[in-house]
Amino acid sequence: MLEDELKELFKELNIERRPRTFGAADIIYHGQVVRGRRRAAAVAGSAFGATMLVVTVGFVLASSPEPANDPATPPTQVETTTPLPTESRPTPVTPTAPLDGTEDVEPSATTEPDSNSGPTRSPTQGTPMSVNDIPVTTLATPSPTAFEVAAYETHPTEALTHR
Amino acid sequence: MSWDAEFTEHFDRCADSMRFTAYLLCGNHHEAEDVVQAAFLKLYLAGPKLVRREGLDAYLRRIVVRIFIAERRRMRWRREKLTEVLPEVPVRAELSEDKLVVWRASTTIPPRQRAVLVLRYWQDLGVEETAAALQCSVGTVKSNTSRGLKALRQKLGPAFGVLWQEVTPNA
Image 1 (spheres, helix red, strand yellow):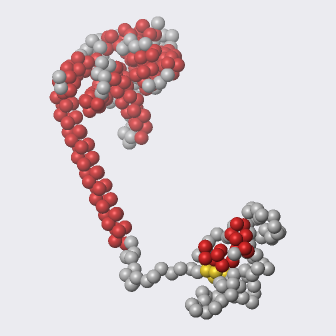
Image 2 (cartoon, rainbow over the protein chains, first blue to last red):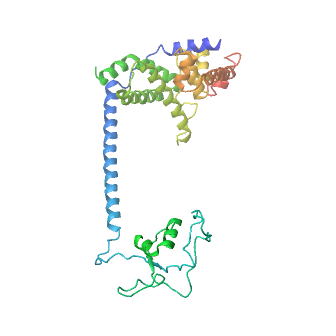
Image 3 (cartoon, chains in turn red, yellow):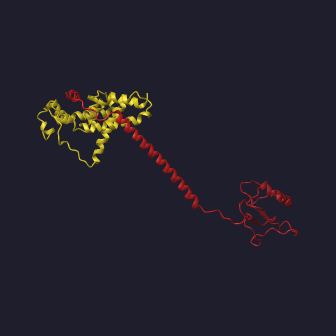
């Protein structure tokens, strides 16, 4: 059998002993050298990485634009002035809001203002005004609900004061 | 016991066995010395991190086999070209002619098959232990064993003396 031949061959080859060319002390010394080299490489690598991080952060902070030193100005408000709708044309009603069933209102969400009456600024104090001439200044408020429309139709002045 | 003392004790106990195993794997003493030294160095560096130190022999055997296979794989990309014929052929006088033919033929089979044959027929390892040492499956060990023996038989032929010229062209 070839397997037996191999085993006998291996046994015969093992008879002759050769002297050792290195010992445990050599391995330990070389291992300590390798370990020290790895530690030095790790320290150098971490130091290099930290330095690069600091330099990168400093570069980014230095290149960022400085904030404007202009004098403080009051914040601008975007005002939208819409004319007060007349009694014949009720304010737009959202289509989902149900009415009380008294009258039919167009369910359009947006209505075009009259071409004649453009947007006007808030009136000066002391000038007598009628209900129809009072402009309403809103700051992007949502469209009035059906309850507000009904309250406006019954008591226009109170509805304005409440708003 | 410190790791250095434990390592020294382990080295004195199994250095010769590992050197001979590496010699069977590599086919020459010089490469075997390098492989064993690298294996012991890896063991020394990995020792403090080992949780269990009961299977140091098996771990060292695995390192030796892995280093041998890695070295053989790396030889393809080296500039030095290794040849089968050495300038000074170390003829071992105590070996018979048949053993010498078997030895020459065993050095020509692929490294993995050679490692399987050495582990199974010299270290007397089972199929599972050989698979663990080579980090492969049991089926791979069986197939490598079969292929290695088949390659040896093809090299040797029915009569060793007739094929002596084929195995060793310079003889």
